[in-house]
Amino acid sequence: MNRLLTDTGVVFGRSARQTLRSKTALTFGMLQPLLFLALMGPLLARVDLRTGGTSWQAFVPGLLVQLSLLGGMFVGLGILVERQVGVIDRMRATPLHPAAPLLGRALRDVVQLVVQAALLVLLGVAFGLRAPIAGVLLGFVFVGLLSAALALLSYGLAMNVRTAPEFAAIANTAVLPLMLLAGLLLPMTLAPGWLDAASRAVPFRYTVDAVRHLYLGEYTDGTVLTGLAVTAGLTVIGLLGGLALFRRSGHTP
Amino acid sequence: MTPPVLDVQGLRRTFRLRSGTVHAVRGIDLTAGRGEILGVLGPNGAGKTTTVRMLATLLPPSGGRAVVAGRDLLADPAGVRARIGYVAQSGGLDPNCPVGEELVTQGRMHRLPRAEARARAAELAADLRLDDLLDRPTAALSGGQRRRLEIALGLVNRPEVLFLDEPTTGLDPGSRADLWDLVRRVRRDHGTTVLLTTHYLDEADALADRLVVVDAGAVVAEGTPAELKDRHGAATLQDAFLAITGRASDAPATV
Image (cartoon, rainbow over all chains, first blue to last red; front, top):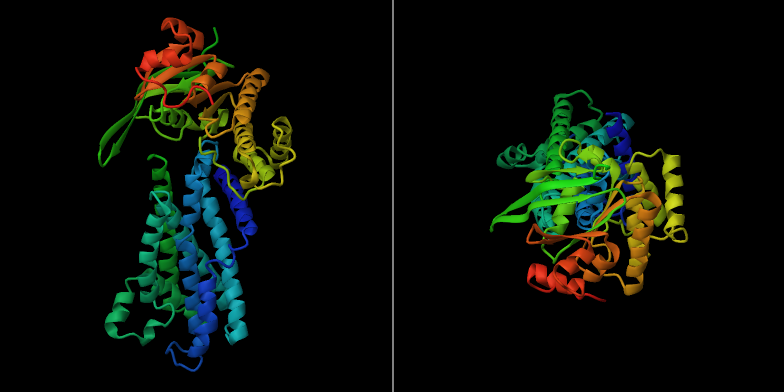
């Protein structure tokens, strides 16, 4: 266990330095939520989203989950490149714990996405967001859990596809319906019954609803607890699934 | 007699593809003693890379057994990993990572404490003429410098066995000669056993103490370069290879 932690730390450090070296890494993935914040947020300022509170209190949580979704799902592209040039094999031929290359990278992604989420919230405040501090901080926990789940699965998938275009096709196909159905941009409180029902099949729906409640200062209601259970459940699935997929990739050429 | 550092018996690997079953390696035997340079010679597709990947614990064998650096490959893969260096044909460098950092991180992956990893990196950099390049991203290295770095990464843990998969493919003649010297020096200074795969006959002739010729996933001949030539009454390894496999190597004998 101790070894796993140390080894994960080594890979985390390596990955974090890669991110800090890359001038585009911090803005990449953040650009889309930023554009939505600046160019769509103001349109909603006088619209009643029927979530209670201001439109910003509903909109910014949606953007945070969008950031996590877009940022998390595509991290696999990075490991695909590393796999193809032999970095993963080089790590696997050392005594490093077999799970460390996966966990260290995912940890870097969680840190990166939570930092980006914090920047997004600060910008939201500049645009007019007002929300309780405790709610905002708890919201980052949800962002972190969701980012971990998606990053782990993304790496697992990327280790088991042949090419980057194949990976991108799968991730792109998944991301748009999930984003729309979860009610990230506009909440499902506006949806007709059938759409609201369909959206309940998408786990991110519960995450974003919970963060919206947190931004209203409602910390202990059923929505928050359900959201926490679903999001933490996703993290566990992501962890087990990601580890299984990562292990499997070591057994195929 | 000391036991062989590398003892491989009946190693097999099959791949199941949609198009059918491919027998990439069909039962390879090989041994190498301490400080020996063993050349695995064969045309592309002979199963050389698959064999090395199995011995470096990266691919589970379909059958057979192997002792690598005194550890059983199947029972103790972690023990094997701690005692080998593996340099893939693709090299495995992060293009944006500075040379020095790549060396230190490799030490950390071998579980050296931070200070020790830094000291080992400095030592290898000096030894392999990388010390002027430590701040340079690996993408900015020449082909020969890059190979030296990759080998330095493989030597971080002072391995008993160093696997070099096609180490000189794509290098210019000067860099190739340079790399041959380096491999000889590693063996001389540290008693490292080196297993290198190649499809260059001149490289096999010049560098290897002993050769294993593989073709279509099986060993077809074994011996020192001189023995192989004698056995087939051949003046050059090229002619011996032709006699053994019934065809010329698909690479030119000289560059």
